[in-house]
Image (tube, one colour):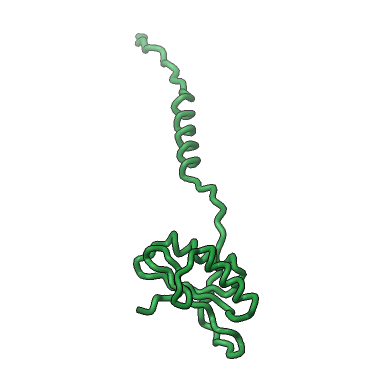
Length: 131
């Protein structure tokens, strides 16, 4: 007795779905990857004791409207950077402390820290605004 069985059909694996998945993953990782040049801004921790023979730090307040205040006068970012650079070269300041108001977001704070770092002040600190 012989029972006939249908011939097995070979299933081929299609490469089209695999290529589609790889292409979608490629697009996802291209869109999710940031190509920005990340660089750090060094901040002082304030744990070292203050040296008495060094000049005092420059206390800069960053208001909620983006205005910078130094010695009770309002400055633009470029004007303040130039003033601090001049005072640093004359050895009237040794460091800079940026005190943003509580409403200030991260973007303006980082821009101000970057401008302060551009003046040549090597000792930057981030502090609280004294109300």
